[in-house]
Amino acid sequence: MITLLNKLQDLLDATRAADFLGPLALRLYLAPIFWVAGTNKVAGFESTVAWFGNPDWGLGLPFPTLMAALAAGTEVIGALFLLVGFAVRWISIPLMVTMLVAILSVHLQNGWQAIADSSAAFASPLLGVFQLEDAGPAGERLSAAKEILREHGNYDWLTETGSFVVLNNGIEFAATYFIMLLVLFFIGAGRYLSVDHWLARRFRTGA
Image (cartoon, rainbow, N blue to C red):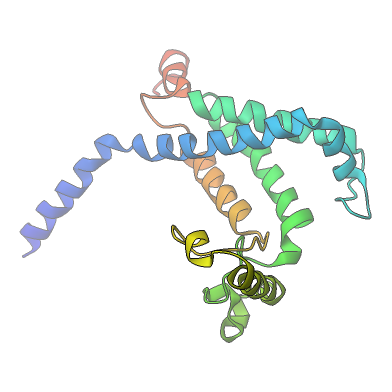
């Protein structure tokens, strides 16, 4: 029995020959997300600065022009670096900072859920110990919107390919991206299909 288990473990370990696919997948998933976020900030830079700095309807951050420029630059450059696998561990640091700022200044007040779903675990008062904030208000908006659509629209057609949803704008997506970046920070860009790999082979002894 032990021999069989060892052979199965050996087969499992053999898949590590393709372990570069993990960080590659993370990089290719995150690159377009940060590219869109960054280029949108650049395209609407004045409105981004206004949103960053306004304490009434925006984030109320200090030095909004500098903060907006840093956020946009980090996301655009970070997207390019992730795409080609260059300085991935280094660029993961400021990208994680942008995610933390987004979590604390934008999303935390809305709880966990990115999209309102009263059936999800973190929306349930039964699991309040894990719950950042009840998604009730967004759930109420969702119910009201569905009633309006059923009464005044073709609800079956509108929901033919999926259920109607309302954005809750919680920390879920930003936290997910942070965790993915944290993994890249520790494991790097991966072998073969990254600039970092070939630079390390060329310039780092024993790499």
